[in-house]
Structures are given as structure tokens and as C-alpha cells.
Length: 96
Image (cartoon, rainbow, N blue to C red; front, side, top):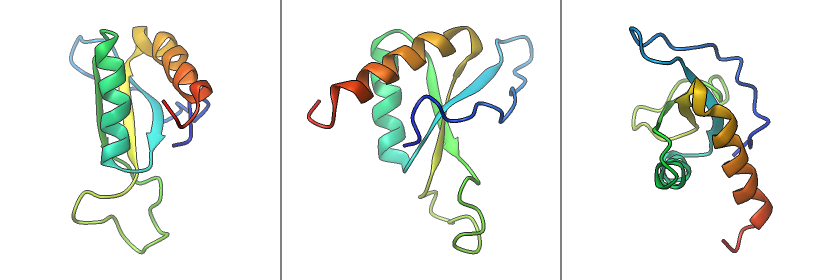
């Protein structure tokens, strides 16, 4: 995972009147993305993830199975709090 300093310059995703969705981080795979989203959901932050073309070109094309890097997305108003939580998780180390 690239951590909370991963660029969020992917741009907003329009949701028809809903708050814009911003990239929080890039997870290595779907399992890691689900773990991050689970932690955020436990804190009341709506979270989702999607496959990204972050590694596009390294293997030739996007994997058909959905494996590979995932963008973890949250609503813009929750981005700062989500980053704080992710920082806390990273600071706690791998034993958490």
C-alpha cells in the first residue's frame, strides 16, 4: 500500500449530487483494500474500492480476474479523518 501520502490527484468522481469521492490510498490487492475499508467502516466512514490502472503496462494489460492494485475511495468530507486513521494504522506497525 502506498499510504496516506499517495496522490489523490486521480480527480473527483461525480456522484449526481453526492459528495465527491476521492482516492485515499492504493492497496496492493483486493484483500488489503477490504481490510482498510473494514477499518474505516468501523469508524463510520463509507468506503469502497475499485481496480486501478496504477500498474498498467507492467504486465501488459489489466488482469481479467480483478486481481492487482485497488484504489481505496472515500467521500471528500471524510478524507482527512480517513487519512488520520490510516496513519494510525501504519504507525501501529505490522503486528496490529
